[in-house]
Length: 89
Image 1 (cartoon, helix red, strand yellow):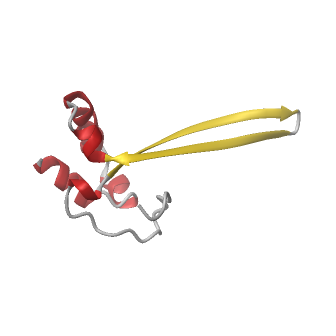
Image 2: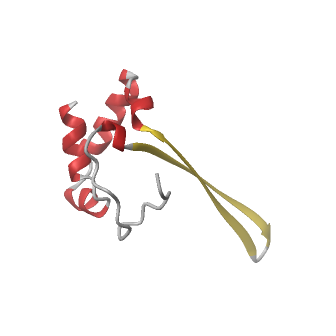
Image 3: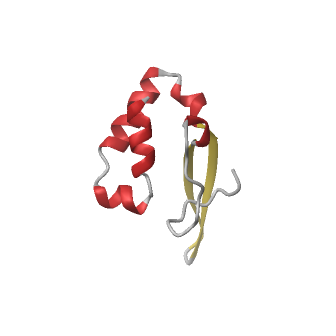
């Protein structure tokens, strides 16, 4: 895991198996400071997907999510290969 960046232009290595994948969550918080200023925070957590994949409910939720993504979203997030891989497991 060399970077937390998931920007589409960021070059990432091609995943070859489940151990190459991570489950990423973001918690976004906005805090008002005064009438003209607020702060926006993003907390990123990443854990190996294998840790989450063993639980049937979580695995099904991930599969349902990736299988519901449009072609445009899959292309934007570069998830075609990941979708194919996960559906074979």
